[in-house]
Amino acid sequence: MPLFSTAPDASEIDTVINWGLGVDSTAYIAKMLTAPAAHGIDLERTAVLYMATGSEWPETRALVEEFMLPLLRKHGVRFVQLARSGHLKSAGITVLDDSRHPQRLFTRGPWTLWDEMESVGTVPQQAGTRKCSLRAKGEVGDRWIISVMAGRPFRQIMGFNADELGRRFGDATASKIPGRTGVYPLIDWGWGRQRCEDYLLERFGVHWPKSYCTFCCFPVSMGSRPAHLERMRSHPDIAGKVLRLEYTAMSFNPNAKLYGKDTLLQFFDRSMPRDRACLESFERELDTEWALYRVRRLFLLSGSGARRPVMRSTERVRLGDPQQMAHRVVAQAAKHGVEVDREPLYGRARCWLRPRSATWPMAEELFTSAPAHVIDKQDDNFEAQWHELVDESAATQLSLL
Image (cartoon, rainbow, N blue to C red; front, side, top):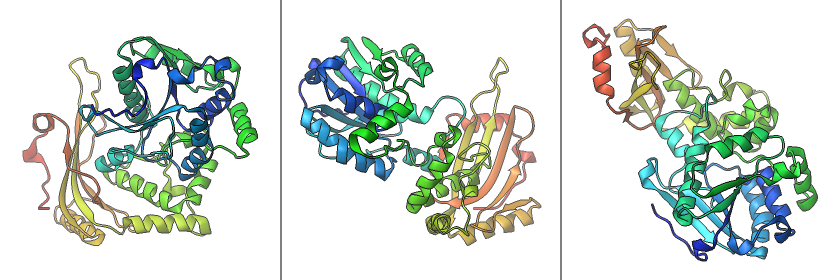
């Protein structure tokens, strides 16, 4: 696990502050720095941690560098910027910067959440825990803390606001780091979201925006769709990339919509100039090399009859332009009497050799054309499980190679 430090001995740390760059944690740090000792903080024994996911909004970075980094430099605050080094845990983490005089915000490292989503052809999932956040933030920060603290007692300050009481108890229960005590000052102060926003506006004269990945699904689910779409319209280049991410994911799985039942694409109206700019950016993103993919899924049951995580195999069969790949799917589907799902506006063609059934266990097999950003990937033991469930002799075959 690569760790590089230019700051003082880590054994001097007894307070760690998590900073996500958003309203709540930023308000805490800005307020605390008006009188650190009065807030129980010894800056010589404190480190502020930031975990870079790789897709922060440009205005957040600009505000951090304009207002907060000068404040950290003024007070000599140790600021540690971290990122995941690769897809696998064994790749470890990378320290992008570790300084009491930070000059810039490093918003991406060797690996990013975008890299992971794009390479496997998926989008963040709204259901269940926020696994993407845990991988890009929680696991990264925890590994650094465990390495430098080595089991010594320390406080970890979390920027949960007073409207999020449940997160306090969830954090206290979930954390397993030896020696850790969670601290939640905003909750103790009674500062809710609005109070934090008001404080930053009073302090810096700007409205501090939400901090989240450009392709995050949660702003819409939390009722912030209008603000999120306005943000997209202000950055049509970003909107185009996110639209491509969603379009590619839906090529592999029609249910892979960014917002559960809704897609990002459906919220843009070509008759509106700012929306049209986003859609034109999306079309430029699609003007790239495409591929023909074979996708298989297994929906299996455990020995007790419980549903197991879905297994997937993705194979890139051939490369070409969108029209070539769509034509290949259409021609072969017609030859073998398989229906084609054709999306004429942007070019995708897709056909199912084996549609999923209504009950588990079951198998699914399809061919689709899509932008060629998705890599070949297969879950462990997939082939053995596939041949155990699927009677290949009864399968419809396509001569796609």
